[in-house]
Amino acid sequence: MAPRANLRRDTSSQRPYVPWAEDIARGLSRLAALGSEDEARAELDSRLEWLRGALLQSPYYVRRLRDAGLHPGDLRSLRDLPHFPLLERATLAEHWEEVSALPSEQEGCVVVRSSGSTGAPVKVVRDRRDCLHMWAVLRFWLARAAVALPHRPRVVLLDALPGGLEYSTRLPILRDGALHRVSVLRPDARERLRRVAPTVLFSDPEGLRWLAEQEGLPEPGLVLSSAQHLSRELREALARVLPAPVLNYYATTETGPLAWECLHAPGRFHVLAPDVWLEPDLDDVVVTRLRPGVLPLVRYRPADAGTVRRESCACGFHGWTLQDFGGRGACAFTTPSGRRVDAWALAWVFKHHALRAFRVTQLAPEHFELELVEATAPGPLLERLEGALRNLGWPRAPRLEVRAVEADSLVTGTKPQPFRTRVDGHR
Ligand SMILES: [Zn+2]
Image (cartoon, rainbow, N blue to C red; front, side, top):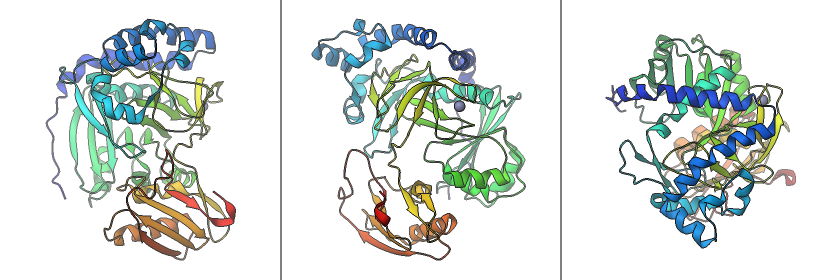
């Protein structure tokens, strides 16, 4: 296990970005309070000025638009967007360097890799603001959850990945706060969480599952999870020990945060306008970036399914909302007692597998097939899978047939389908 490290980080240079972060949060709040679609669209249209300029700096877009008989100046309003070409994830993966509007060696820029849900990694150029954007959006989310941000707040990244890297660092961008990465695999994880008593806790479904098994932990103001599927069962289990609001957000490395799941009506992801625009009335997520930065994205398709509509939500949010967010291939398994459970509740078991490197098929209520691309011994994986099934409603370990398969043999369409069922004709 890696030693606990106090990483030296360039945190002192965060402070100049505080006014910018506050401005981002104010922008999100203002749009979320605007009942008038015309007014909201007018504000979003005003953001296109930046985008037009950025497209002229992007070698990829200059060429791509010229080939399509278009010019950045043709983008006067969001209503012009449907005339513009889509940018597929594979195209971004190939042309990542020339899509960005500045050379990647620009000061403060970093190149990050996204593994994403569709397999092939994409390299993404990020500037300093992109790297800090989450802290700006967090201010807005805290306000939505009615959580007051104290001075010097403590933030924990609760990590369930093997390796157990931990660190503590200052976080000047968030009211002179501190950031602690805590690994649940360390024996003193509980003790550390108790000592830190975070205001904000970031994790993922696997970390939340661990959290749901602990008792006597201090209650954070807000718990965040990134939109791998967050099942109702897990939400309920967590609520029994920690009554804090849980905010599940949808983000991709290429775009940053895009939407968050309503705190009152799960399944509805409210779009983070004016930072991004998600085109309404399509079956797929199509993103146009409106927040200034080095990577202009017009009609980018992260390959996630969902439909966006304008609405006023009961939670008080006005704006665009993403529904039927099934990009990750919805599937229900049937327990021996006949209950249907969301198969994606098992996703954390396969955290270290690409979504195209495994497939779980339910053949009968107590019979599953597990296909694995790699030849490695699946022992610990099977143990985790059996444990997870037990928690979901299989009190007796079901029959698990493991099959090694060729790479690419599990690819059936544009989206991976790692969970399938053959029970009662359900899909
Ligand atoms: Zn809502």
